[in-house]
Amino acid sequence: MSDAPRRELSAVAPAEEMDLESLRAACPGWHIGGSSGNWHAFRSGVSMLDGPWSLLRRHLHADTLVGLAERLDLQEYLDSLSDQELAEVWQRVKLPEPTRQDGS
Image (cartoon, rainbow, N blue to C red; front, side):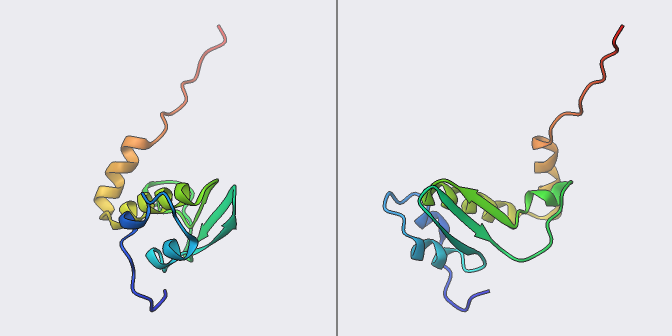
């Protein structure tokens, strides 16, 4: 984590003139970089592949810096949820189980 003061991401995300330094200041726990059409944000930690904690991403990608800011804002919201709240979100967004269709 950075010692820099954290800016409120919601104040940065909707800006039409998003800049890299503002986004980095708003998200000191993320390593943010890239170029036009290819923006990435990385953070440390273990990635889960399934279950509610798979919603807590370690890598985000977007074509635009504004798009990346929106994803970071959503991730900030998910990070703030309790384990129970995260499980409830997971149940709402989980893909349905595939149905087995018989060939006959």
